[in-house]
Image (cartoon, rainbow, N blue to C red):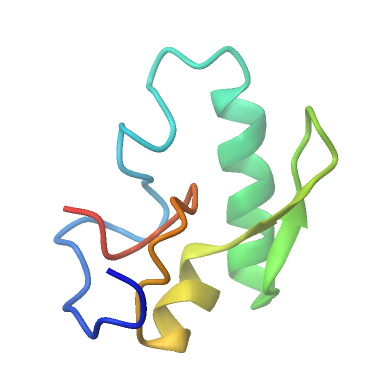
Length: 79
């Protein structure tokens, strides 16, 4: 998948694929809230509320134009 040009998945950029962020994840609401704020601001990413690691937004990944194949939480290319 690395560098492969693909169409965006048929879901909003605000909704990660369930395989990347489970609907049952205990921190899902905090994660989606942090993602929404960063997405609205046009930021490249946000610090994960639990780990503090930097997570790229779906908007940034979509603008990049390709899937890197690294399993990004908000990958807009995963169907």
